Image (cartoon, rainbow, N blue to C red; front, side, top):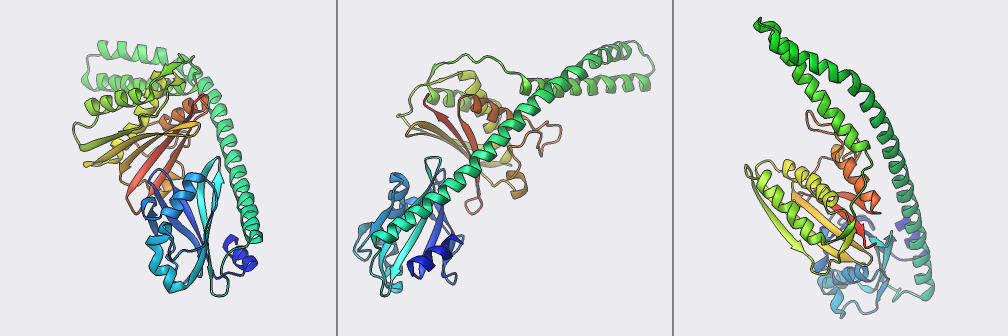
Length: 363
């Protein structure tokens, strides 16, 4: 609809919409006209498209009047000559102060450039689309927070009610297991003990999820917290696999007011998921960067997340692991939310790479 509306109003023949993936520094062509030969779903690296890279960095529109000579369009020179492109207009779609997409419009044939009226129309339309996307995102996040709060209350109540009868069951089962001489009956008692311990472990997970512990907030070196988490993962989890961890930590990261233990646990939960996603060998990349008023941590691993899984991976109690309660990432979201932060998950199918993006504000 958006592409057709632009083409109809501006009387142009070519229009493309790219989705931006900053964590993998890629863009993907998600819509375009004419459809024939437009290369839908093709992916490109930022470094190969200087004009789009400039738009993403500046979060502002860009009008190139001489695309056949401009250095910023040198990678598309052959296409520009072949299609007879006279001017190119780039319009960003900004959602929550980040460029989520870029609209690219080509002036061809008798249309030599884009007028101020054209520009005003495109900017107005992009602002409207950005507001709609942002509204949907805010509504979704609000509903998720409300759901997490309710789940926390229900989990706490259920755990307390179940724990009371479970304690004597476990205690008497242990006493029976010690006193019974007949092997088969003793085995039955030991099964009760093991299953009781498993239930106690599940209840402890529920209580940890529901508990609002008081954070010890101090100015903390985020890069140092990342290094600590990486060291724990290397020593405890990846010895049996051929996994290489790459650290790319920005020296510009400021100290943040956080509980370092909480943030370390957040990183460890995500890193454990990354390790488990790699069967035998692969790479886990951890990157930090400063971005205006927030810090981002990118944790990527080789291997994709299945489409059915990624749609629900952040939902409480969703799990693909036998014996798991599925509260690990839900707890991560709850912790980050207390700091005004958030967690995003992306899947790059073509590059076979999954990424978790942690965002934390400076204050």
